[in-house]
Length: 173
Image 1 (cartoon, rainbow, N blue to C red):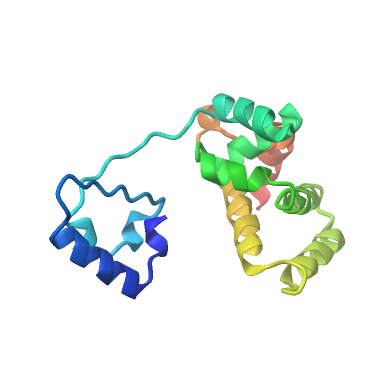
Image 2 (cartoon, rainbow, N blue to C red):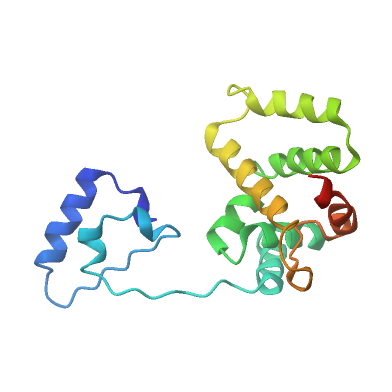
């Protein structure tokens, strides 16, 4: 996660990259190359690693975390081929927010605004939900909403059983 380097770390890496030790290879990984300083990017070769197929990732999660195949499929779809993100989502402590998100989506689809307001209030309480988890929840909500706008033949709905309701709901959103 090279994008998480602070300025000090970036400068230290830049010095090493300018005069690297013999026979040394550095591998920087990131999902956000635009967050890495241009001075470092200009000294790197870029290799895009394709995402892991959803079915393969789902099977891996079932084996590794011993979770139900349906839940593994949802998590694999959320992770969009990123193994590290899928492992994070599959961790026992992280899965509670998936339930909150699903309740939010169902509230939106069924137009139960009171329930949705309660869930949003719950999410806004920083004592209950750390900022990083809140960011994950909102990122997944964005993915879900994105599914309302993609071409019908390419839909990758997070929860496939809600796809019909999502398609009916999308024009009114």
